[in-house]
View 1 (cartoon, helix red, strand yellow):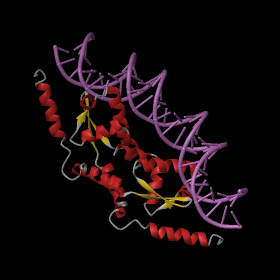
View 2 (cartoon, each protein chain N blue to C red):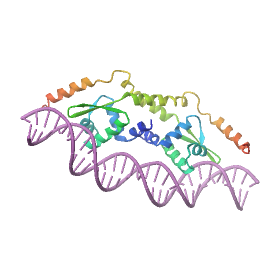
View 3 (cartoon, rainbow over the protein chains, first blue to last red):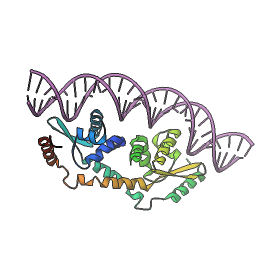
View 4 (tube, chains in turn yellow, blue, orange, green):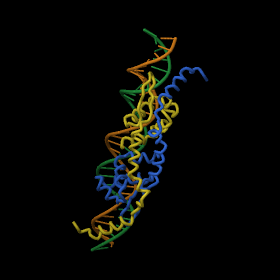
Length: 110
Length: 110
DNA sequence: TCTGAATATTCCTTGACAGGAATATTCCTT
DNA sequence: AAGGAATATTCCTGTCAAGGAATATTCAGA
């Protein structure tokens, strides 16, 4: 999760992922469409690869990169644990304030 | 999306968010539970706040932070555009290879 | 009003990381 | 075998951001 987020936090890498959303692409194509020069594209793809976000398929000279499903699934289930924030009524600030008050009153307890 | 990812990419900030998943918390509480010293906690909360991930509620001396729903909703719909990767059969590598081949054959077209 | 608690802000330093340029590697084509 | 395309790797440099320490601010209570 942490490495995934880290990989996606870089703008160019996010762009790459959004490009690959529509299907596999070659390093050269990616570099072209994003206005990167080839080495930077390769480097970013490496990071994405290490994070498990993409996988490579070597065909002769070319390397064809495509998205891997797993990280997105994980992402999905991670989000799942936050759904209650806008489903249930999560905004229990009142309760929390009462808690604070209670603690203040009994601040000499051990 | 980019700022959201950036904010979450930092480990301590991710922890803060996961803490707040269970309800609002005070700066001091957050710092305690995460083993941060107060200034760092405040700084991270500032970043999270700028990213719109949390909101503050001032009560006397204390600042009570809690999660905001919006960014998570956005996240959810962002993920939505990636669902086809594991729902439909996305792995159309064969098609892509044929495309490559076609381009190679006609590489003298304009 | 004074003290102390809770929080924010500033300044500084250090480490990580992205970009550029150059080079290495692999493979196809002739 | 040679040249060139496609990609990866290395080295260097500059930038940015996180952490530490110190300080400022606000507030409650005695």
